[in-house]
Length: 242
Image (cartoon, rainbow, N blue to C red; front, side, top):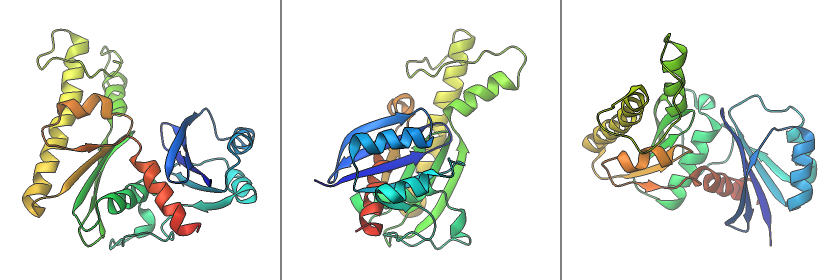
């Protein structure tokens, strides 16, 4: 049974999904990306293939390390993809957004798909029914909004995210939670409605670590999948590491 390691290095977390054939068998949050950490992962899972999506300056030696131990592919704008990128500068598209677009095309082919990722930033990624990734938008994510209220004011506290919140806040904490989380929900609802007005019927795919805080507050029916980026990475690996 073939084993593939799918690494996702984001601004907040470094994560790994282990695929046995085409099924996720394990998800690991990495404490760091040192060569010793990667070596222990390779020893534990004995992988055949690996793929790396990174939007940060990761350890410079791990690409060579993975190349020696596995059939390795680094995701970038030159990667073979199941969609086209008719944008002015395709090399500026983040690796994470490429993986999400690949997942949308794989699971919902020949349909308009809006993939919304809730991470350090919210990214809106639109892939049309012709399998063209035409772009989207980026706005601050949940933790960034909560932290900015604390960092740019004299007295507001740093509030921990919580999905259980009132519409009308009754103290500082609940006022912040209501403003930030419900504000984000209304932003997502509004942008989704604008896409719907322009393109008609389409899928909305929601992913990212902050799903748990936002999903229940959204109006439109969505497909929530926290592992969507890993599934996209696996599909890209299969194309580029046959």
